[in-house]
Length: 345
Image 1 (tube, rainbow, N blue to C red):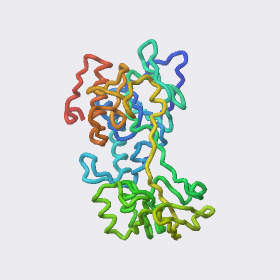
Image 2: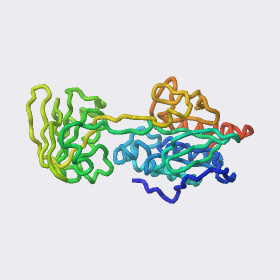
Image 3: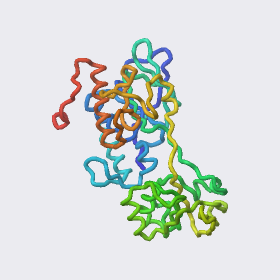
């Protein structure tokens, strides 16, 4: 995991006003790839920058879901482990020493009489001239299985996230799911786990066809259409019973750990109450990444555009555009185009 470094900056009380030093040029809500690259570009424009994220570590979904997995669509890397990409993005952004507030959820966004924007969080308040919302899909929660015995073993032997592959070293692993996450982990953990069984409640998988074909050719045991019936054990798994949901045939498995990958629920939470124009599950923006609120921009997965492509590459571009438009908003004399980085660095 990425270390928090010495960049954290706590929220401050704004009652009675704040000195100019406590007002930031841009505050980026979200410390995923889009937010981190936005912070880098804000530094390029000599903007006083702050990042706020609800998670305890930077990296957003990559840190939470894909820390140990390869990412193949990050520009410049044929493939790169998620945590390594986050580390490099943080290193890139940190050249300009942005303030970073982690484990801090933004609750409200309000404009003060002097035109500055006040963000109230779970830990304090922050003042800023502009805001770039790069909160991805918002808070996300794994879909849970309702099988008896699972809840009691969650965190000890039942997992919904993979923080470190080493947690499954030498274990007989059961993976539940049929999407990309389940299939990818089935492939990715082969050299770590002693054995892997993957069950899916349908015969057809929802993952990429090439990945499914690779899984079928691997030593992973695949059972469809199977579901978890019950799990027993105290502190560790003693027995797992699965069943064929068509024939009702049951089977007992000898496994040490269960990894459940059956999707996630996303919730934008308080963002929906900030007075922003929303479209489906995103914040409506124009081609300049502007929202309906002056000085407030959105970039990345949360930005609702006519054509949506939730890719790291498009998030980078949108973050750069949003930050440069924000710079021009603060200082109309400043050019929107910052010039090439090779001229500045």
